[in-house]
Image (cartoon, rainbow, N blue to C red; front, side, top):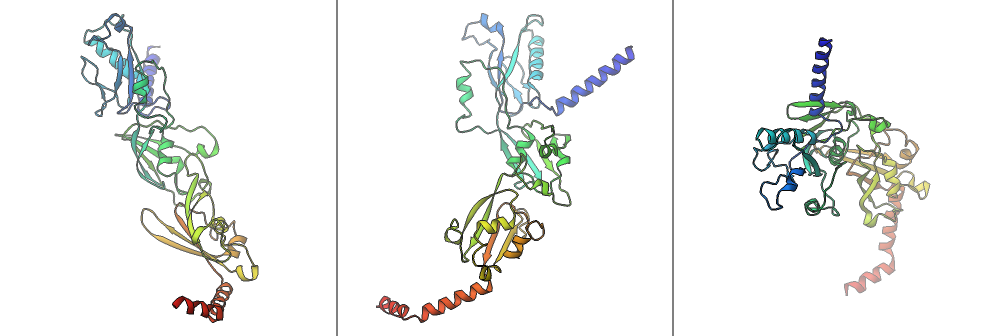
Length: 363
């Protein structure tokens, strides 16, 4: 019986250590997080007493809480319940309170923005700032309102792993969803995010400042990832240029940036740009050119497709590829249309009305 209890104690201690390293639900603290410390013992002191403990505290850049008459208390990477236990133990050790009489409450009143690094198969890898305040909720609003009002409970949906990936531009088609890594100091955890696309539960981990997210790459692209989701872009910018005839009414001066749904193909961009349609005999051989540039390496690839073949083979990934952010699509006239334009130009030049107009303009 004693052996079973000892084994259970060891297993429980290991489980607690594992959960505290990478908690699945509770959010660890980061520099800038604001905590409210309350104790009913302060009610017996004057409001201007320097011995009052209750108040609003902010986690310092060095990861500690500066509590009056105590050494800096560690806070970064810990859950609020852990900070409360450590603070209570420190107050008892200093002799300020007896263990049986100390009543202490620590709660979060404002979660700070945190900066993390995202590497690997995302469209904009690098450092990202998540959980930034909105215009309607400025950063200092919590300090002004919470000094006169006690707030219990706090929730932030924007300090999690999925948020960091979205802020880094979203996943590329070759991202390995099942082996996304979260690195925190010397600790590392691998997360399977494939459930976000299938609707099953996923362990979306909370982040603290300084975390690193690594998205590995597969040797192939996944069409299932080329669609709007929590981990991929909703819309992408595409550069369209069409000086052909007929031109699209929404493409001013031959070209502009258009926002298309992520998952759109080259054929859809050609339709939006007005490259398709018109007289079939003269316009069926119009061409669309796709220009793609790798944002990291700068390598540019050019793909040319006849419009008619592009539309008829729209389900072929090779003939009709998916569009990526900042791709360029250019439309060119067919040979018949080009010849017709040349003949019109010659006719205009040879026209007597044109010569008279030039004569008077020169004068």
